[in-house]
Length: 628
Image (cartoon, rainbow, N blue to C red):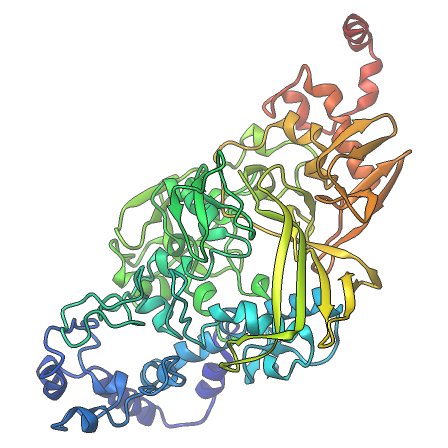
């Protein structure tokens, strides 16, 4: 049972009588779904006009606790889950978990909840690689990707400044805690973050007069079975800014620099930011929301505690579009209880037995991508609209010799957010809110950045042997000021892989274009190879945006080439990832000799590896002589 969460697999293996399991399941289902005439009348005496959560969630007490038979407000609210704590600890475990224990266990182990990968990256940035305990947003007993038991230790036990940085900066979006921000970043905890999301002002606007205008509260009491894109955006609008890039928005930097013509952008965002418009992702332009690409297993987890985000992702571009040599793959669903059929029951267009469903990169069927005749069709889950996905298999541009290692994002990303020169200061003389501890504690962080760019973006070899976009991750220069005002660290760079160095990380910016980066643009622009803004000179590449600490290093890159010697001065995070080597760099630049005449990937000369010695034949010698 390779794709069943360990707790479920272990439960299924117990030697319990089948009849007892059926009876227990039936009783549990009955307690979770009261009939329409058993709605808690005592609750609606006060909460008249409150929206029904959904057709299968019509009672109050099973989800919220309390006493529906009580005659006073205080008595009725006694025993409500989390009434006295706005972060509602235990609400989703007790309320939702009463019926949806498997789903709650999945979310508890997911990277959205543990944030284990984020914490590990912060550790590597601030203190270098650290063996031993794996830290997470809270203590937990889980199973790793191989099904072995694994203990995750609360980040409260991470007795290093990196632990504090997570708790005071990053933890606001952790699912275990409600985000009480005063702007559009606010979101509830747990299941409600996606299924009962806050509106723009985090205030209730539904029909219940006793609740109207209260915050922090979901916009209405109606459940969102399919999480709206706004719920995703509330967390994914910082750091990599993927929610912004996907919608075609771009913000200024952390110093709130005006974004266009000396004036703020026209769209108001959180944290006093403003956004300008850029070209949106091609999928967004086609009407697709986040849930139309990402599966429920990616969003909620599959029951295993992945070490990082990459361990939880399962979709690839090739699943729907194929690549130069291989078409998308499909499997036929035949039974009513197969996952694609069950999941599609809440879609605007339902999957039926006999549909040939596309397979993800982990050989699991999509619930909204299927084959119809010779086409790949994507169901937009909310509306039910059908969108045809173009298949690129066999097209000349996708069969260029030497491009076999190119990831789709390397050519089709319009932009990739890159923040260079992140200077973070930790001052022990001040205090700041610790969002995990729930109180203000000594020590405060502040940060500035030097420059932020969108394009061109550097490429490197990723962990799976594909050429991918990379972005600074995190390119942090650390300063620590002690209680006496004396710095103990000044613009410090942690050791990574044996030496002090910054890191770049593979990254998908979610700003995809149908047109690829041009051949001449990629092969003639050193920034795509990792040199930063620079010029090509005889025997090397000279950077033009230089680090103030070392004028031999580009601030916005990680390679230098001088007198035929290539030097990499930043690592690429992820095991097996690395910058391009000298042979690869020369091969990329060498293509420029051909591009003047053979300017597009459709040209037949690119169907086989380029032989630069072919320039010695009479035709090319004559052409080159004319060029002189």
